[in-house]
Image 1 (cartoon, rainbow, N blue to C red):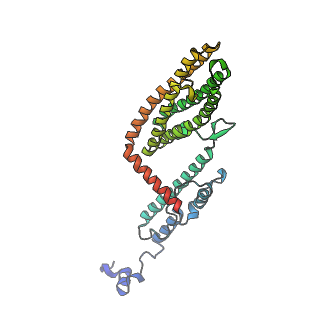
Image 2 (image 1 turned 45 degrees about the vertical axis):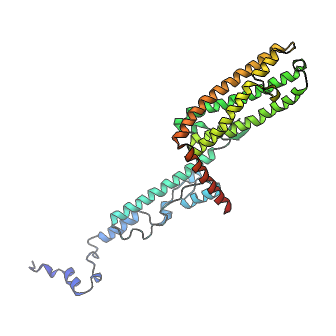
Image 3 (image 1 turned 45 degrees about the horizontal axis):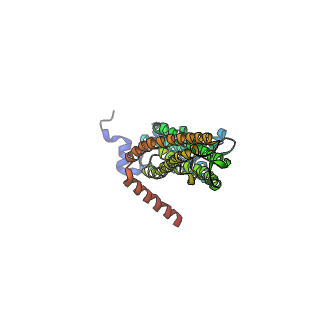
Length: 329
């Protein structure tokens, strides 16, 4: 055994020339270099094609590029894929750290692809289904879109808007009945009232659905102060209209309390029938008004929790500025 510990060939070669000219691990007997190359090549893909996800059986995109194409064709706001090019990013790190970083990027890519696929499936599912399957006009699903803690409140709003549809239709029926009985009114003004009642039914139902129900539906799906603010304005107008319908001004085609009294006092054989019809209309609008007052109190509490009027006005300004910027592009 040699007594000189520095007589090793590796030390002698390193002392006689530059350090880069000798690599003590070039010897195949150590197996370290070959192990490193084989581990990296077998464990971690080095290109985007190696991490593609096979969705051929489901008709989904074959890679992250295909998922991007799906975004362009559907117009969805899909999340971008990250880490699409990893060549040379982690060469300065140890092998173990390199493997961990590349594994993280692969998992992230796969998660983004799955998220895109779910968004595409949701877009496919959101076909119009309301009000009738045979004649759908809009997509409506409280179970799928509204947050779980707000579904009960949203269902109450949905029942209310359907009750408003019924009240508008019944008010028109009362106006038709009064017009059909000439002896119940002294002039021909009720023909005009029938026309106004038809406007209440057509425009009123659309306004109720679009103005205050869809606004609260959207606010309960994604709570935001600006959405609650818009809803509260529209719903306050609805409450004022329901109060007028309950009062029942005869010249405004409203079969409420005032019209009911006139029908009971009319000189007609059908006065009792017409009076009872108006009484039922008064009862329906009373329910609508009472339910509306209760619901607006609950919604106002949610509005305050979401930031109140100051937050709503700020969000509306930001949305207006964003819309103006998009239109200017």
